[in-house]
Image 1 (cartoon, rainbow, N blue to C red):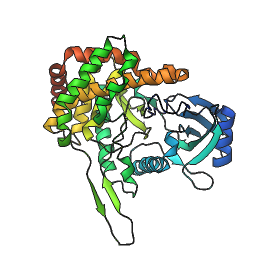
Image 2 (image 1 turned 90 degrees about the vertical axis):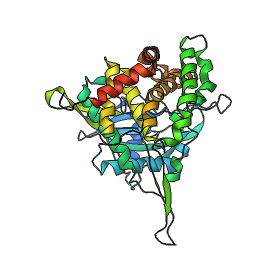
Image 3 (image 1 turned 45 degrees about the vertical axis):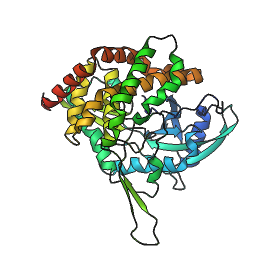
Length: 388
């Protein structure tokens, strides 16, 4: 079972060639679980991951966990990792089925392990996470009613995160991260990986459309606000901000079957792209990934949109930008996936997961065009019935 999809912010080709991806053996992972968490491992197996390393662990009584080892690059930002861990627990306490970290025997929610995985000694953040039941949406025959409830849950997650309080929320100002939908134009610096592929022209056209039709509207999107509050002169300022998960994809949402062949979300995974951002970005990301493996991809947008707007209605500029934001995220996934596959060929198959159906999808959406696709989405959303 796939339990995590982590997307590492890319580095320029002239930066350090050291591979940040951990390569812990089963034996070393077993030792970490026992040494730091007191877990005597009965069974352990590797789980797929983008740039981290995940292990499915079962102890002697039969309890399952996920041992998550972050790549060495992201492990450097312990403040951000701590905030991601806090957000998971915060949501879980408010009824969202988020994966959470389990304390070590000394009460820590994460540890730093230094080891040499064949690229010199590096430090990796290690967390033991709760195991959540279910299968990814990719692996499940979800219906449009299920997608409505996914859209509703995704909006609820972002609305709930408005209440998150921490003195470290400023680390979520991640304006430079390539995977932010505010940074679609940065794709131009990576298009050489698509040289010779006709799809490159489509990606270029999406970027140009984004720059002319979306970028000028971003300041009108519902997004981040912040204020500083001091309750006492001796206390640090507390920063309140709007936050998005940033990667609520088909791989990061687990579902379990319920009555009448429907499904409910049983797990929300991977908070590595937690950031300040526009709410419509979250919606576009979710629609894009849920379209990938759906046998009727054009039916996805309306159902997810209806669920989302039951919690947070879009304004007119957000509605007018949704199609290009969905295409933008799809182009990001295709281009950056191909870039990372060249850089880390040992994980090529997983890094190119989106490319399997994404190439066909982006071509289809671009051919249909903004007007037709948006008409389909918004008509479906306006006529959607949860009982259908």
